[in-house]
Structure formats: structure tokens, C-alpha cells
Length: 261
Length: 317
Image (cartoon, rainbow over all chains, first blue to last red; front, top):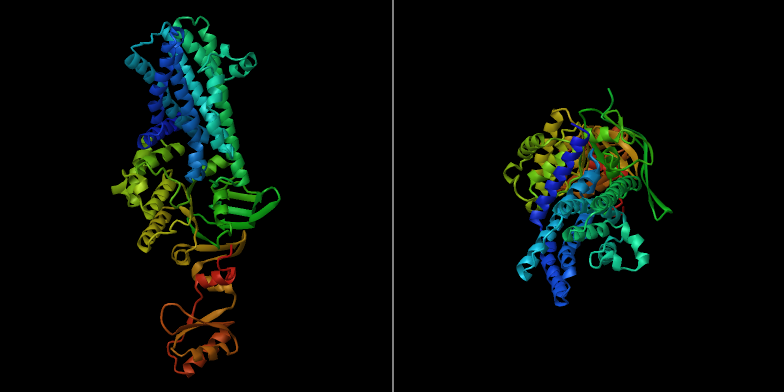
């Protein structure tokens, strides 16, 4: 068997591998520990100021943050960890592209991050009695799905960038907050200075955040365009990630740095 | 029929900081026949691992050609990857928190095996390498020997026809190393070819059909380990046992004697290295004249050949 079937099998095996690894070292679960605290803080601020209009922001933001943390802090380290552990050489000696393994493992970690949405909703309902209702459930579900897929694509790109960089820890530590801002997670993009808007539009999170808030409020008339933007940016990131991963493997084979940790 | 491995003027240069370069393989030409166990000997930094990595497509050569079962390692990378197994060994390279079985299930997918085939082969291989009872324990609790065996099982999962083993018994206790060697011999009997990098001369002598000694990326000698003495040209030796060191001093002064050394193991055991067969006859006759009835013609061991070819460079790399 070959072609797409074999590729899907590799991705699925990588998913199962990551599930098994996550069960034995559930460090991604920290995302789920932090999400309710973020919901509590943001919702408390919104309610104290009588800002009913930003309740949706306060509930949705921890979910988006959870996804980004999953992509940046955990998924991004997948290849780097394999390299440190000496698994890289035998891995690239196999006939399948490394990018497929990365994508499968990253998808699993992102899925854990996505659970932050549900947790945040629960925290708002149980701790504050605020049950967030979704006015446009179908576009909302599509928005969540598209956002998760785009996060997988972006995390694949992040993983490739980290492994190519000699300062991946610096990147990891510094890429959180700028993307919360550019992604319109903490503050809507419209509230940011105008010169930031073009940068914001190439960050899939900005489209996701806006779309999710609009679907909750029942104000998502243009949702297909937003979903397409999220998926398009995610696909572009995935393509760039797979290309960079391949390029990195080729470079390591050429320069003889495969075994370097 | 194509050889299992054939390299022609294979070259690999590592560049550091743009200006500094290290030549790891220098025009190395080597042929490994099918169904052969071929030992690759050499000091640290000789180029053994570099050669294995090029042949398993992990590294690209800087020049020359390398073919595995007729496939070029650069132009036909995917074909080569399906045909070869790479066993780097050591403590690293596995998912420590997962069980041996789960490790193999994952690696099976990387060789495009379906889940059912992988499960069946993983179970059979784990039994075969003696890990059947511990197959569902996390690898982090494994000893070094168990990890080595798991590395071998991983290398065999896709049933490769050529296996590259890089110091597979390094750090194993003698019993585990012996079991490992028996397994390699069994696998050879199934028609597989092995290229085995090792520092263990006894292992090379016991296991390999032929050995190649490389140093600084160049081949120094290649041939059957049992006839290693031939590598030293006409050199021969005479072994004898006598407690008197003065006798050894006197033997060293005989014509045709290269040197005399004390042998490890038995007390009073000496080895006289001679320049040629005449020298050997002379030493044997001289010793018999002095009632040393333990004297006999000896064969230089592979280790002696190695030390003479590579030189005594101690800890220098």
C-alpha cells in the first residue's frame, strides 16, 4: 500500500504515539489547569466593570490561548525533542517524510489545547453562572474546527522553525504575547492601532477570534469568508512547515548535523 | 549479481565554522558481498559511523558513489531505505516512556507496514530478541542490553536485507554480547547481510567473514579475520612460557627478531615477533636448545594487527 493511504497511516500512528506519550507525561494538561484561571480572571474583570458585551471575549479567549500554548510550548518541541533523544537519525532513515510524523503528533497536542474551550465554558457556567449560548451554532462549530486545523498547520511550521533555530527557547518564550495581541485574543483587532491591522490579518487567530465572537453574538453573516481565511492561512503555514522540515532534513544530511543534539 | 554494499572512492568532508574541515571518509572503496558479515574496525573518529550513516541515507556523501543492493544511496534514497536496517544502539534513540511493543508499532508505520503486520512482527521479534516477557514494560526500565536488543528488533521490523550495526554490543555484559552475536549469526543464516562497526576484536574475529580496518577515513586493510596475520606481511611470531625474563632479553637479540613482549593472561608467557619464516625457525630452534618445550609458532591476533596498523595513539583522537 502506498500514496495517501500510507501517508494517513503514518499520521494516525503519530497521533497514537503522541496519545501514548501524553498519557505517560501529561505536561500538556497544564493548559487545562491554567484555562479556568484565565477564564475566572477575565470574566471577573468583565463583570466587575458591568461589561456584558465582553463576556464572550472573556470565555473564548482562554480557549484560543490554550490552542496557541499547545502549538508553541508543546507541539513546537516535537522535532527538537526527537533530536535530543537520538531518535532523529533512525527516523530520517525510514522511507516516510518526517513532516507527516510531525503533523500527526502536533494534531494530538493541539486537540488537548482545544479542550480549553470546553473548560472555559464550564468555568463560566459553574463559577459565575454565566452560560454562554451560541447564536449561530453551525458556523461556530466550523470556526472551532477550522481554528484547530489552522493551529495544527501553524504548529507544524513552528516546529520546523524551532528545530532550525539555535535559539528556539528564546522564540518559544517570546512568541506568546505578541500573538495574543495580533490575534485579537485579548483585545479585538479593531481596538488596535491601525498600522497593526495588516500584520494582524496574516495571523489566523485574528480571523478565528473575530469569527467565534460573532457566531456567539449571532452576527456572523460573512462567516464563510472568515472560515476560508482561517483555513487558507493554516494551509499555508502547514505547507511552509512541511517544506521547511524537508529542507531541514536535507540540510542536516548535507552538513552532517543529523546526530547533533 | 550486485554486491550488498559497494562504495567507490567515497568521500565525506565535514565543514566547521566555514573554514575548518575534517575529512571523515577519504576515497574509500569497499565491497560487502551478499549474505556476508563484514566487520568495520577502526579507532574513534576513523569514519566507521560516517560510512554507516551514508549507506543508510542519513548522511550525504561529499564525493564518490555508494550503492546498496544496486541502488544509489543519493539518487534512489527511498529504495535504499526500504532495503536497509539501521541499528545505532546505545541508550538513546527510543521512546523511553513507552513500552517496547508501542515503540515498534510506531516504527512499523514509518516503514509503511500496516498495523496487523507490525503487531505480528513486533510480537515475534520481541520474543526472538528475548524481550517477550518485558514487551509491555516501559523502555525506561530497560538495561542497556535490553535496549540494544530492542534497537535490533526495530532494525529488523521491516525485514531489511542489509543491516548496518554501529557498535551493537558496546557496554553489554559478556553473556548478553554472546547472545547478541548468536542472533546475528541466525539472521545471517536467513540470508541477511551485515555491516558491523565494532571496537571489539574478539567479536570481529568470532562473527565476521571479512573485516576492513579504516583510519582517518582511509582503508588500511581488508580480509578474513582468521588470516589477519597476513596483513602484517611476512611477520610471524613464536609463543613460549618461561619465568626467566633474561631469556626474553636474549631472544630479542637474535637475528630476525622484531621484538619480544610479555603476554597477558598466563604468568611467564612471552611472544617473540619475527620478521619472516627463517626468523621463526631460528627462534624455535634456539628455544628448544634451551629446553623451552612450550615454544610454538603463533598467529598474530586481529587486535595485534589492529594496533600495528593504527599505531599506539593512546587517548588521542
